[in-house]
Length: 335
View: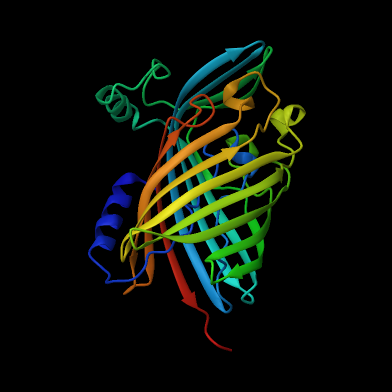
């Protein structure tokens, strides 16, 4: 996937559609750190499940730029380049209370084509480029412990990531208060190439709760969202001895219906420490802020999300991220 493909796609969608309410579901985002994303923390999906007999599909594209390096004790890490995470997601409503699904991820690591653009953006707003003093437009994702280099990816890599299977149960949906709560579980299968940072060598299990509540703000709908859960990651061979057994995760989000077809969004994501490491890039907790919006196109049954991802813990999460997603909801043919 390339940015020169994404821009025409947005422009084409902007020419279509008529009044309809944009959906309030959270941005479908995972952890974007190239070393931590292999360990399978699930994306937030919201408490509103797909209706019985309907199939929802979503294509979510996340582009992140890395520019960091550090040493601590006998450990050293280099993160330099860009990563594309493309999730093709399908969800099917078995009943009005049960939903099942599958995610087919595509992962690509390449050289940092946006380095100069991001450095100029930081200079314009007086932001720090302290981690961007090394060579521009290269790929280097490496980790060393003592005298042993355990990870060293310098050649562009792309392919299938770890496939995820999901199931969700709607615990309650109180229409009079606009409140819903769902229990969601998932397992991520070891289908990605571990040596190319596209997956790990074990199954990742996750279980969490997702809540949603609707209120009015300026006579427009305001959706408040929350997620909390825990991940048990499978074995990741290079750093298996450093893995934590459980990783907590959570999300807080808001989506305001600014116009009939438009929603403005903000989303705060958190994950606990994945690894026992003195390096903040690997051992720290992660926090990121995503802000953007959604627009619906009812004539073609699509919704488009566009957002920017900002790191709140700069040593743990990527320095820059761009998120695009297309979602389609359709009834399945009767048998």
